Length: 109
Image (cartoon, rainbow, N blue to C red):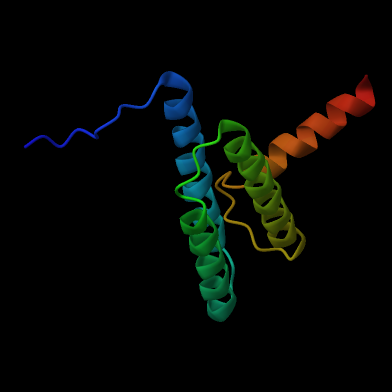
């Protein structure tokens, strides 16, 4: 018996999968910063439900659209945490920092 999947992923599928896993990890790292345990549990359940509900998706465009939605949701959560004064101070809010950096560069141009 082999542990290899029946069909191997092509490069695009592999890269998309890595992006999804990276987003999943970042969402859960950020959720750990939420001070209220019941809100943490609710956010974890929401994130798990969304990822599991779409785990069988194979359409590349649909996956990219869901990644955008997930990144936007993550950025909103990180911004809310920053505004409420909850921050790890370890650079975990990279998406927020990147978006602020991009906005400041747009203003300069």
